[in-house]
Image (cartoon, rainbow, N blue to C red):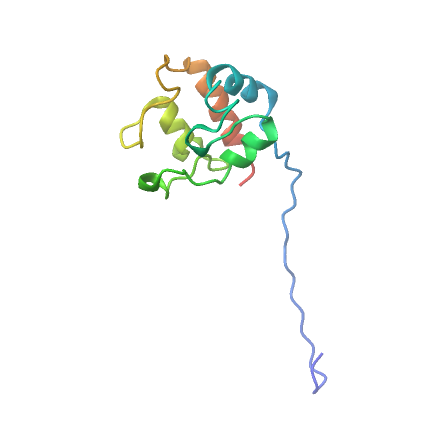
Length: 124
């Protein structure tokens, strides 16, 4: 109500979700088996992926650390196809540096699909 007794109101919708800010066990087990020891016992490239809550914070909605790819987002919630993590795992042309895991065989397709399913399930 203003000084002239005029009234107005507005309604704002707020979307609330119960998000778990941790990498789920099925994804984290891939990380600990395939990304170790570089990203689990250390922070190779500035990326530490253990424990699971640190992995979530380091990946989700977080830009890549390399200056040449700093505009890329590691994990885009709900969009695995555009997430840089998937590009690195699939060795997509245009990635900075080498494919992951470095100097090791590529992840089995089933494991990449598990990671993609998790990313696609994240609220956005």
